[in-house]
Image (cartoon, rainbow, N blue to C red):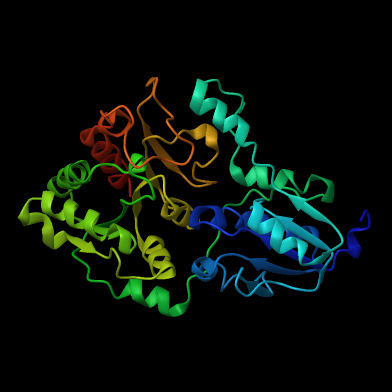
Length: 334
């Protein structure tokens, strides 16, 4: 496999989830540059196919239910778990490279607060490490997504209350990564008092009740300035809304990485998350809000369903006034 010209067929595999799949898009571009005459296929869960469907670098998309078959010169397994290894075993692969997750470092940081992760490195850079032998190098660009014309039309046709558009990505898979609804409402109230602004709430079906809690915590006079899209739009419609926004307020969630694909100014709320895990926005401008110095943080490398200490200071200590002030300072420069 020392002959780069021998690599004609490539399969990239990342089964989940939204943010992780989006963070593979710089590598897709860099692999295509290293192997310009190769065909690149991709395997992911069916719920994430939409993120890649319009990517011009990809030849075919597969799922675990409709898996790839046949021969590949190079398989890049960025999931590296039992399921992805099982899928690879059913292929005739000349060479397989796998992402080394180094979960022992995350475990040690969570359990002992001993940090062996070293200087910050994005997961994107760690993905790329698996291809060091193939001459794949960073191209200095960020993540990318390709909303369709109909997705862009969806965002364009949203009601416009005037002023700037702030996308609010308020959900997350685990509760320890979610800024409380009353806190989001306090940030939005301060912004609505200060400048003409439209806030668009973005989330999935699991986030509908959370969006409702934010709206219930807002003064009634501000409700016309909010568009609630929780559970009402597809992944790529959400991407188009993010592309149309002037700024994004978000938890550590897949939609944060989605917004980064459009180079949006991000205002990021980290609760149980820490930057050592490698999931800061990739090559996009951001302001990070986090409660530094808490001995209980991080309590998990993926998040928890509740605060194990009961006080939830990692989120409650992030003052709404400070978050709103930072967003206002940015909008006033536009």
